[in-house]
Image 1 (spheres, protein in one colour):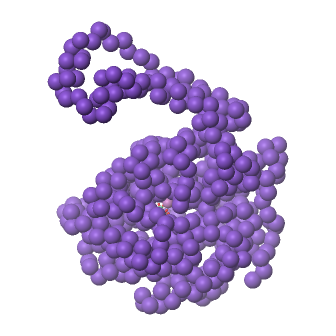
Image 2 (tube, helix red, strand yellow):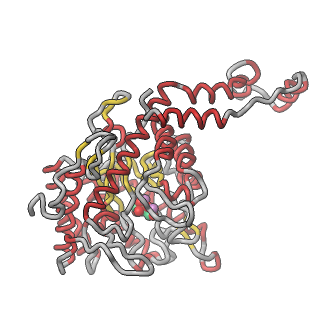
Image 3 (cartoon, helix red, strand yellow):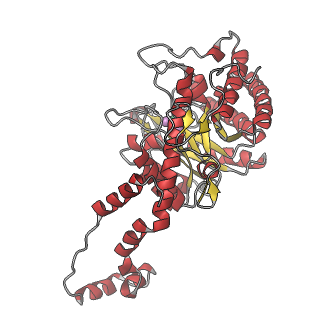
Length: 444
Ligand code: XLS
Ligand code: NI
Ligand code: NI
């Protein structure tokens, strides 16, 4: 297949700077620019997601597909998968994306039997391996789609029917092998239908125990076949289930610790899932980071006027700054990266729109990176924040921090205190500082 078969109008996306009017050029993402000790590309580790970009056809609950992608024009599912792979790698190369992510069923079609599905996946994995070698594009993470097929309507690892649990295990078994074969850095579990609709038919304790057990088995097999990266759980509060077991970061951290999985599993935090849980993206990232479990992110955005996973491309530079402050504050990504779990709107039907969506998102995070680095280097925010907690850095406050005061000693300390003078939280000042760096474009 020619390297120019599906996107003939686009030769490649390059950096042209903020003054460029070319919609098919980066205005801010300058991949090889060095900042804070690394290139922008190394900091951000962008990944294109296979499902939204190459598998989805724009259908929604009210209407059928609108996108009519040329790579879908084959009647045999395996041929379609091969064409899709060619289109995907042509796109990754032209965009300059260093990574991609997939579900097993994005890459290869499900067969009639477990064995047939495994064989289909192996066929596509060997082709993907060749493409990776030829282009240098790498796999950020793989995952198993344990939610689309009707057999999973009552859950996968948390299904009340053991046969379905075993089927889910077979799928994870193969998806792990695929991920290892392709050198993926992470393996994700998004608990699509791991949850329930009504307690009247649900034994929640059993389902959670089964889920914990299942993930432990996946970890054991992954490690056995040489997977050294992070296993990741992607929290989401709802949709498709009414109650999802991995509601948010805090819930998931408690789950991982309870089942002894927190040494191997970290979190993949998605922006739109955070807002669905009534949190900010930054809150979820910080919760994961504070637990030592921030692994990777799914970058996208929701819509503030409605309550579902609209998976739009992220364009909000303020959010990008806030999230990168947490990510950089945590030492940056190790195995993870920024996966664009985002799709063009169903009326964005030009093939160019797929590039344009990614360009905007990559520019947003590149800009956010500049601003976040400048803010961190200036210590403007950190100074105000540490000043607020200075009373814990000395005297009785330090003793308390070290755990050497009991409740009576605290009482005695308080009894001797003169009247406490309250201090300002300085929120507006801090918000203005963030804006000040945004106005300057992050350039100190
Ligand atoms: C759905 C999830 C899904 C995961 C991968 O809401 O975001 O796309 O990222 O299974
Ligand atoms: Ni996601
Ligand atoms: Ni999502």
